Length: 452
Image 1: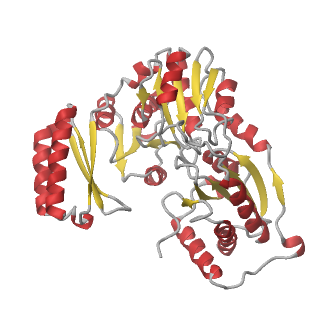
Image 2: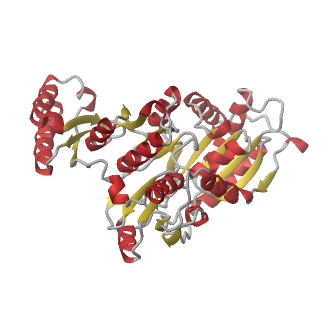
Image 3: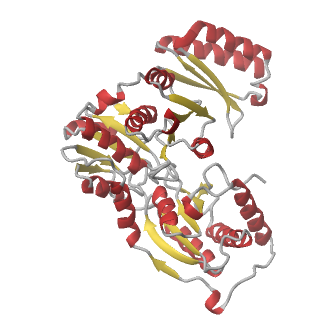
């Protein structure tokens, strides 16, 4: 039986993989494990529970709230808010844990459960493992120790969470956004109210799309994975920029005034230089992943900013930032972490800081993003191969060495085994797209021949 917790909590098709019974059981298990770890010692425990607008979030929220209260935890139910809002409120309210129900950018039928520790930080892997073990043992019949009488948890809606979070976002901005017109695409998700409100309070003129969630339309043709409507809307409304979120609003991609995409690497580049200018880029270092575009790496080197690269995944970026005290990190996909103001990726905060830089400098987003040139990047999946041998095969190593000689300093090769499928991902960057395609094709053939 595989591990329930993935890199971003427990996810699956709601009411099939992720059932009400599982949500309730995991919540009770989390309460017991944290109690045993001493988190609740000396006080009555409190949890913050939020969700995105998916229809399934309604019954899963009810199950989580029931599980926590039955285990003696008081619950503050904040309703539909972004994942980073739940993380922020968990810390701001000094709660013992936070629970977010969302499957991020996944389609509507999916959902997920993510736990936050005290302070709004990601729950340690060791605690996730203990929660899973405890859940499985009780699911197979072991009885719970259940409180009664005044020992059961109390539940109340915490409607103040919306204003508290928006005030936090606006309060950390270095300057206002007066004079900017911004189009916000909320993906019919958790940021549908929050992001437009935050931008408006910061002084921007706001146009909205994808901000009418009905429980069924989350991520459906809108948001950071579907930019076409935002690109058209920015041009139509002659806006200065557009901001796109995913379903739980922990990521942000942007669009310049001409409708061109500005990806996570470019956003990181703009924010890195802004933070260094303000003295906030600790160690003059930004954290990215091995999938960061080579153009980003070259731009940071030229600007005197060090780039530290981690494995793919915002959790690895966050671990590197926390262990070395770095202030800024993120991924090409738009997960950007500004550790002085958030404990996780925050798409609304990222968009606000990007717009603030445009407003402060008087430069266009296209001009600011032009600090780096995105080199053409080609990704080829090679299926049905023995991915475990990709790092040890002499034939693969020889093919990679030949490709690297051909590309020189203006290109890059990355071979990465999939974490979930029997395939190897071949990524090639080059100054010319045709060269990138040619090299990627030859490398894919070599991987298939050597490992197939």
